Length: 461
Image 1 (tube, rainbow, N blue to C red):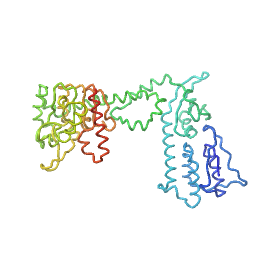
Image 2: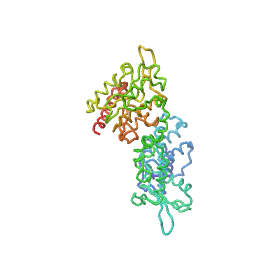
Image 3: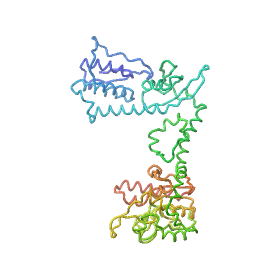
């Protein structure tokens, strides 16, 4: 049986009630939506019946669920709702409590999508002020994912009761005249104003409240999808704010540099030879007590590129040179492949002593904590000042956080080049030891490819 319904819940309810009274099971019904504008509040005609349709006892939770699902664009929503309704009225009264049920799970998924889309509309509608016949009016254009305009419109009427406004979408329009809501057809974005005098003020406010230290690009894109950027005045600022975030974060955490315990061990003369000699006696953190020796950086004093790792490993601690163990061998191999001769680079670590646990015969790497990184930072900054590299490449999150603080996330900013107070070009990528530790072959191969791509970018620059 083909049953046509409107794009609203009231139409479906009348049709579904008639089908239930006739005893028509879900597998014998094909729901088709009438071709009607989403903004129209008119419902479709009910399924013909010769007798009045009685009320049916349906759980309140289903009605609340149906109000959300009816706004979804999915053509399956009416058939799905009727199938669940049939089961609720034919012996499965507690069906909605069974979250693992396939039909219930699908309904919950559609409901979740509507709740999210509703939240986005409330958050991302931006009104522009215009003059109409001498009256102030505010117009916004928005592109929701689903048919939610009638559902969300009362929120804006409550939120802005004292101003005349219109919200235009591709599916429907809604207008508030200070007394009532009226709905109309959808319109293209070209019908909406592009901006007004208040946008500059709003953009200034947004930029001033943007916290670079808390930037999470992935979360921001998930919360503010790019499809909405065209109607958000603050969106045009986002690329530049993201680009400048590491520099601004660095300036925010810069006062901590003076608190580095290693600063009291720095020599008066700050060339690399004098620094390396003075570093041998550093006792700025507890790591020196168990380490064999201080492992200072090495390379040309005028190197264009500085590589910064986390800390020495077991073999580095025994030999007194950075990156000579398995991770160093992998690094040398990749450097050769991308055309970056190691002898032309200055290579060092954020922490100069090997931190380890276990027995002397089998010393296990222990990641340095924030205390050790801060304690050693004076040495790192002294090396940067002595070498004055054009580019700094941090290998691993610990090295990157030594510069930009614990808020830096390698998985979000790996391979991106930033301008920082320490070098015109600054990048973070994987530490080669991380590649060696990956148990999954596919993940290891992917990370290796990205690692090489990042270093190839360094070579090109």
